[in-house]
Amino acid sequence: MTYLAGRNIVKILKTENIGAKIIESEDEILYTKSLGIKADICVVASRHKSESGTPVLTTHSPGNFGRADFGGNDRELSMAPALYLREALIYLKDEKEKKGLPYEVCFEATHHGPTSFESPIMFVEVGGSEREWKDINACKAVAESISKLMRSEPEKMPVAIGFGGGHYCRKFSQIEEYAIGHICPKYNLHNLDASMIEQMISKTIPTPEIALVEKKGMGKEKQRVLKLLEKTELEVIRV
Image (cartoon, rainbow, N blue to C red; front, side, top):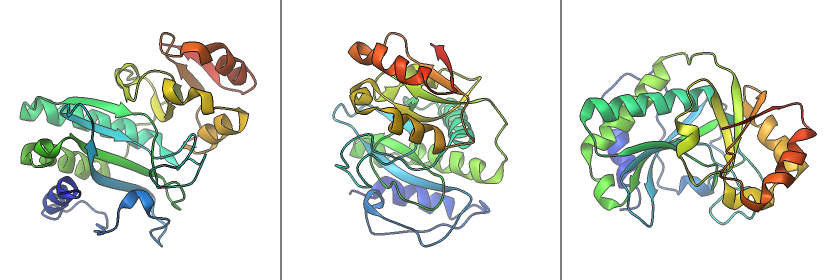
């Protein structure tokens, strides 16, 4: 049942001409080191599992701010395609409305592997329990969002990285004027140092110029992280 949502999404994608290569794997993608090919972008159709089981359609890039408990390498981030992440969120919101799905749509914070792919990578997911993974309309929403993503050129937009808030990035998901790459949530802020922030910058594509800080979602790490950000060339915007 682990791969049910991904398989359902891929079945639907195979019926459409998405202009991209579809790769199926029985291996757990989180632990994959390399696809062995160089692609403009890698989009992973997957399932999201949550303890609450809340119905959700999400998108995010992978990476580990600390220990690699679920694939990838310790303290390593993937390359996050910010413009495509923004487009995916827009398409998921459109599909949710079109299909009347009782699902939340949001970014997730950067988490899990893989972290060493040769190409920018992002996940587009159905969650958060087996019930949602079997929901063909939800899987269609993800498949159609991916199909649109592969067949369109994302809108150019100022690029940012995000700091603070919860795992489900509700505040950042409401922001339309910036394309957001890597997001470090409140529970991972203690792992940030100058080198990790530099990695958030260098591995967000295109290069970000803005740091979005959730002003009520930073906790005790707020002042320390703000001081680290002062040493970068990023414009800090509190949201």
